Length: 207
Length: 353
Image (cartoon, rainbow over all chains, first blue to last red; front, side):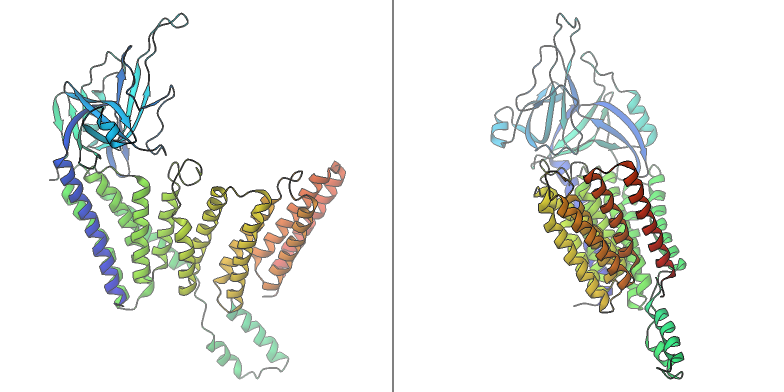
C-alpha cells in the first residue's frame, strides 16, 4: 500500500477531479439541452453565508375554467417543500406562445410522451380554480406548481433585489415579466440557464 | 477520572509504605508506563481554530461573490482544499500526526464547502442529501488515507446531516432512504477500535445509536420486542467493558454509550404497564439499575454509576406510579431516592482513585 502522503494526495486529486468533472458535464448538458421558458412566481432575494440568490418558484396561475393537467397531484393545500418524498414523474411540456406549460404527467415515460414530446423529471402539484358559488361570490384562480429541482438562481444582491421588484402580483391577470430559462437535457433533468427579466436575458458569466 | 498512571503512582506509594515494592523501583515502574494523551486546552484551541479558519475562508469567498469572477471563485475553492490536503500530506511525511489530523479535518470541511459553492458557481441543481453524503464519502476517504480521526468524525457528521434532511430518515413509511449512518457508524466503530481513537469512538457510538433507533422504527419494533435491541446494546456495552479491561481506555466510550442506550430501550420496552410486561419489567428495572451502580463502582466509571442511580430513581418512580400510591408515600419514596442520589454523588467524589 502506498505511503500516507501519497494516499492523501490521491484522494484529494480524485475529489477535485470529480468536482471539475461535475461542473464540465453539467455545463455540457445545459448547453445541449432543449431550451424552454417557464413562468415563475414568488421571487425572493436572500442573503446567506454562501452568497445571494433569487429563490424561484415555477408556478403558473390557472384561470377559471382551466383544468389541472392529468397526472398532477391535485390538492387544495399548498404544494409540499422541494425535499418532499413524493415520487418523481415524467412531466410533458408543451409550448404555449413564448412559454412552456405542463400538459400532463405520468410515472411512465412513454405514457407521459403521449401528452407532449418534451419531457422533464419532476413533481407537479395543482390546485384547481374555483368558480363563483352561492356561498362565495368570487371565483378564485388555481395554481400549477412544478418542482423541477431548480429553485435558486445565484445573482448579486442588487440584481436579486431588482428582479424581486419586477415580480408580477400573483393572479390570473398578472403578466409574467420574469421567466426562468430552463434547459431540458436528454436525461430529462431541468437545468437553470438564467432568467428572462422584462425581455432581457440574465445568464451567469464565468469570467 | 484519574488516569492509570496517576492511580499507579498512588498505589506504588502505598505498596512502598507497606514494604511490598522497593522504593528504588518506583521511578523505573512509572517510566515504563506511557503518559496518557489527554486533550489539553492548547489542542482544543488548535481544533477550534482550524474549524473557524475554514469557515473564515469560505465566508471570505462568499462575501466577495460579486467582485470575484465565478471561474476564479471555483479555482480558489478548490485551491484551498488542495492546500489543506497537501499540508496534511507534508505533515504526514514529516511524522507530525497531530498537525496532519487537524489539516485533514480542515480539508474535509473545505471540500464540503466546495461542493456547496460549486453548485452555486455553476447553478447546478442538486439534492442537499446527496451533497452532504458526497462530502461524507470524501471525508471518510481522507480519514482512511491519512489515519485522521478528525476527518472521520467529520464524515459521520456529514452522513448524519444528510440523513436528517427533510423527509429522511425518520419518515419510515414514506421515505425510501436508508440512513448512511446505518453502515457508516459500525464501520467507524471498527476503525476507532483499530486506531484506538476515543473521539471517533464517541462519534461512532452516537451514529450507531441513531441508526438503531431508525432500524427499530423501520422494522416496527415496539414494546417487548425492543428487549432484543436492549440485549444487542448490552452486548456492545459488555464488549466496550472488555476492551477497557484489556487496557484499551477508549473501550469506556462504547461501554458508557451503549449501556445508556440499552437502558433506554429497556425502559421503552416496558413503557406500557397495562398491556406490556407489567410488574416483572419494573422489578427487572430495579435489579438492572442496582447492577449498573455496582458495575460503575467496580469499574470506577462515573457514567455507569450515574446511569445506575438515575435508573434506580426512575424505576422507583415508575413502580410508584404503577401501584398508585398516595402523595405521602410518593413523598417518602422520592425523599429516599434523593438521599440515595446525594449519597452516591458524595461517594463518587470521595472515591479513591
